[in-house]
Each structure stands twice: as C-alpha cells, then as structure tokens.
Length: 250
Image 1: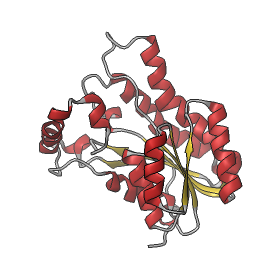
Image 2: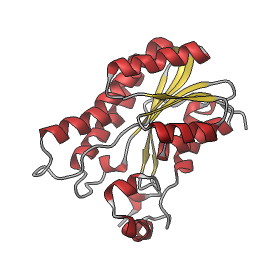
Image 3: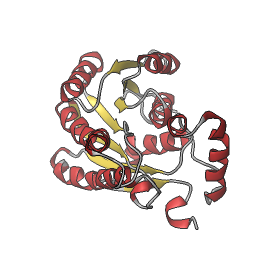
Image 4: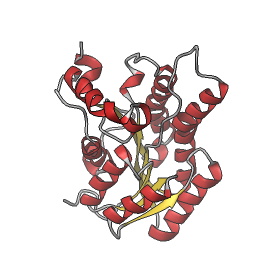
C-alpha cells in the first residue's frame, strides 16, 4: 500500500467527513502532509488518528492570508507539495426566494472562491507534475430542493478542473474533480434533527441505485487514484462517485 509513498498532500476540510476519509486513504498509501480546518477539536482528534505523518493547521479557506500561511507552513515542514485536495465546502441551504445576499456571499465564498484561491496560493509551493483534486457534487447535475446555489457553485468547480488544467499545462499539473453523491458525513447533523438522521439516511439509500449511500472511504479511494501516477493520462476529468444517482436514479 504505497501508491503515494513520500508524496506531500494538503487537504482542506480534512478534519471530518469526506476530507478526513481522503486523508485516511492517503495515509494508508504512504502520503504525508496537512489537514486544514477551522474546528480545533476535530482537527486535533483527526490528526491523532492519522499519526505522525500528518499535521493539522487551523485556517479559514475563505481567507487568503490563511491560505498563504497553510502552504508556507506545509512547505517549511515537508518541502514541496505534490497533491492539493480542495475539499472544504458548505454554506446556506434554501431557494432563490429565501437566500439573502449574506447567504449568497457565504456560500459562494466557501464553495467557489476558496477553491480558486486554494489552488492559486498553493501553486508556488507545488511540484511540477503534481495533482490537484477538486470536490464537486451531484447537486451540480440534479436540481435538489433548496440546493440551487450550492449546486451552481459546484457546477463552476467542475468547470475549474477543465480550466485549471488548461492553465497549468506548461507545469504538467493535472486538475481533476470528484463528484460525490449523498455521503455519510457529519453534514447530516447540520441539516437534520438527530432523531431523524437514520431515517433520512435510509431514505437516501433506498433511492440510490447501489442501495446504499456513499462512505468517505469511497471518495478517499478515488482521490488516491487521482493523486497517484495511475491517473497520469487524466486531466480536466470529472469522476462521478455517486452510487449511480446522477444518471441511473429514477
């Protein structure tokens, strides 16, 4: 299990959910590096589980000075960076009739601005021939109720994989995007009352062509592929890791 041996990775939102699932799979394959998040408690517990090859940096990915600090500290600790995973996201849930300007700005900053500047601020510290992995959402392809703004931001992230790859051809840096569907993460706790969480998960599982919702490890294993030399002929690509929801669900 050494497809990422000695590769240095930075994973935003790496302290929980999909980001932590990616960090775990990276560590299993020999990578080292940094998880980034804003919750010091989950950062500490997550990095303790990952072991000595990873450190945690508390930072806000919507703050450009924080992003510069993340990559500078990573470089000082580990040297040049091989992989960047722009995973952090979230924001307001609602319709065009209910999300106000503050909600709009927060959602676009967290899901779009942060991705653009995570990549931009990381580039000076990155090895040529490296891999950048963006995280989309199948909400970019299906109009889920109350996810209009989030889905629009993720649609733009999917385009970023193409545009960034074109921008970075001279450095042979590949940019690809993973598009998850419903995944078992702590995000459920933010939007669903505790007593309803299991029922909601079972509902989503019942409509998934695979008969189950995704696990962070499903996304993590795909990220390992994109971070490794196994995907060296892929750039600007979108990998749907959504249990068939986008194209096969009724």
